[in-house]
Image 1 (cartoon, rainbow, N blue to C red):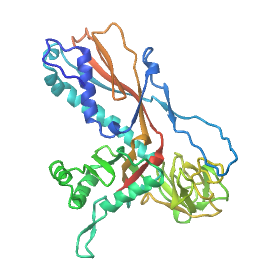
Image 2: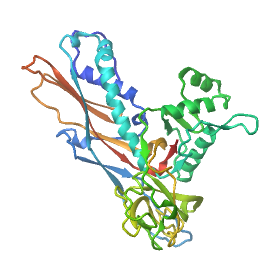
Image 3: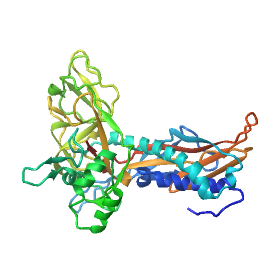
Image 4: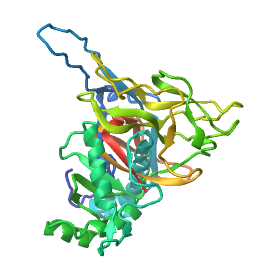
Length: 424
């Protein structure tokens, strides 16, 4: 972003570019996810409800032998609806615009953009509820001392992050420079203490000491974000006897029974379950990972009927891997009465959803809002995939200059398999 020297009068473009710079520096989660800017709305201007289609990688299966086995190419896209008009209202005078850009930024833009970035990050981190892989123990913060049975204090932090990387490896998440890990303040504080003495990289240890946060370690670039979301679990009434109702079920809907009759919210959206004898497969080679397949509950109303039956929706869909199948997720469909295990913790309890992810797991889509005419002050700019609009008018009734900064955006989980929750 360009910087500016002292101005006799700051222009709307200068103010907006500085606002975007400050916003970008304050963003934590957003900064490291896939960002889609839709140019198709640049001229007419987008509105809430507009949709941006984000293309996903194609999937193919492999056959062996000399005979050609043709398969079609089906382009897959995820429609991302621009659902939220993030805006912050400001009120600054003509005299404020005579300040240097640095002074104007410190007084007006920095506090405004801090609130705006916090809200955008918080909404993005809510996508953790779409992630079906999870490591850690509900109720135990990563980095918490486990004991000293061997005479040395032991921590769960190194292993929980190594397990996180392993789960992402099994889901074919690229091992590149784009793996991130976002922890809430408690998890970061515990993990810094647990990891600080385990590495020989004096630069990383020094940075941890100075900043109080982990830098790059264990295959991730770490960040702290107070906007990590909490997951509140359901009643779990009858969960000890809950099982699959009927063999051979596939797809995104699962019929279950054994819950307490008429119990409301036996599961909440975002809870994770496994099913006995149903293992996950590697999406690349379609062979078993050796681990139970995890499914995240996506249905909002999970109330058992008078007979203890409850139909739930899950992600990923149950697709049995086999010959000529490119998108298998499991080794076998559930057997009748296969036991269901809940992984999200105790009933009616809230747990943080710390999150490890590859940048392609999630996307923030933005588009240009329409530029108004007949106003005192207006500009529109795009930086690093985020489009922002600033508009200032004159209120003759109160002799004020009301101003608003807007970002029209929509969040989506593009490939949740490239992420893993770290519960605590």
